[in-house]
Amino acid sequence: MTGYLTTHVLDTAHGCPAAGVAIALWSISDEGDHLLLAQVTTNEDGRTDAPLLTDSGFKVGTYELVFSVGSYFAQFNQAAPNPPFLDEIPLRFSVANSAAHYHVPLLVSPWSYSTYRGS
Image (cartoon, rainbow, N blue to C red; front, side, top):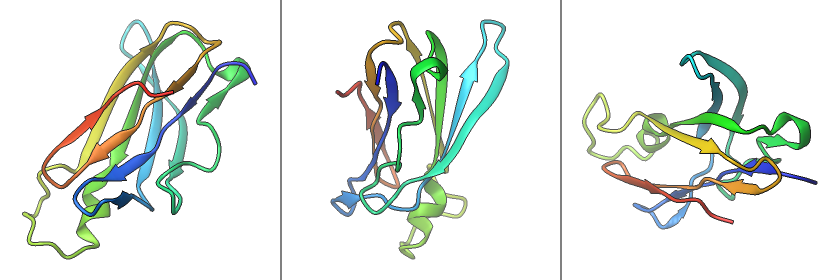
């Protein structure tokens, strides 16, 4: 496999992988147009069952992952506001080398999140 894109979601409020989080992957053109490339849901390990993009589908450019975390945290019946403070989290990033592995994890709680480029 040449370059590819992966992600996973970690629930930092409960200290576990976030299973069942819906994720949408968009390609963003230079003009700002959005093209939906994939819609997936995280598995029990907080990961997707396969890379989001691989081989010839993985190109230099700008992408956006949108994580639907509001519904994930709502299942825990926490005393959280309605609507939730964080509902959908968009992470926009650019790929400069389509032969590399880009891993974009999300660490999230009902009140905060962070990300980084992993390996």
